[in-house]
Amino acid sequence: MLKIATKFLPEPPAFRRAFDAGFRSSEIFLNAAVLECVDDVVTMSRGFDMDYALHFPNKPELNESHLKNCCRLADELSVSAVVIHEPMFRRYADSLKAIDSRIPLAIENQRVPSADLSAWVQERGAVTLDIEHIWMFSLPDATLDELFGLVRDVFESASECVRHIHMPGYLPGQGEHRPMYTSREFCMGIFDILADYNFAGLVVSEVDMQFQNEFDLRMDMLLFERWLDLRQ
Image 1 (cartoon, rainbow, N blue to C red):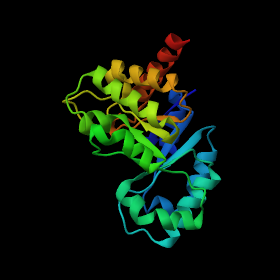
Image 2: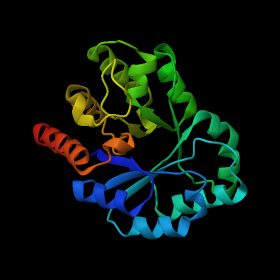
Image 3: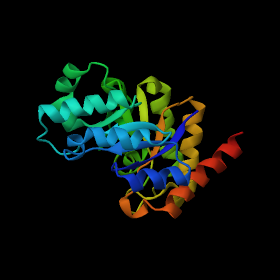
């Protein structure tokens, strides 16, 4: 069964807010500064009974120590995925795999045309499927049924390649990275598709920091719990 997660920089209040809201999985956002204090991140992470994924830094100019610490963090926390943008994958993937060949890199889709999406997923082999990006960039202004159809097509042809999901709440014309509960029909429909294909990875409510608060986090968890009740 899929697991709902949230995403944050690794700071003690962020872990506590997520855990108290009911989350038992999270995606930890990394940057160079975080990768210079990995011992602290490990200690904080192990203080909560949670499953983890990592998001590789989006900015370049990382050194060998940063890369080694990323691999170490992935190993020590037994993460399910290390989300990475394609430019950073091209720049650092070989070096990361030379340090640890088992690091579970999962390339995130950005502006992939809808007609190319299934092939893109298959060619990359291990991906983070960002559903908001699909609706914003691959199928702008499409109906929900059209979006659901494309997501089903991806899973029909390449479900084994989808390791991780980003899915904040989204509606065309609204801003990015809003809570799931603000787009209930969208999120519950994607939950159904993921369950139909036995997706067992993390589904991340990738919200902006203004929504990393007790109310919005709990509302997202309540949405997921309601979907579980309906599904059962």
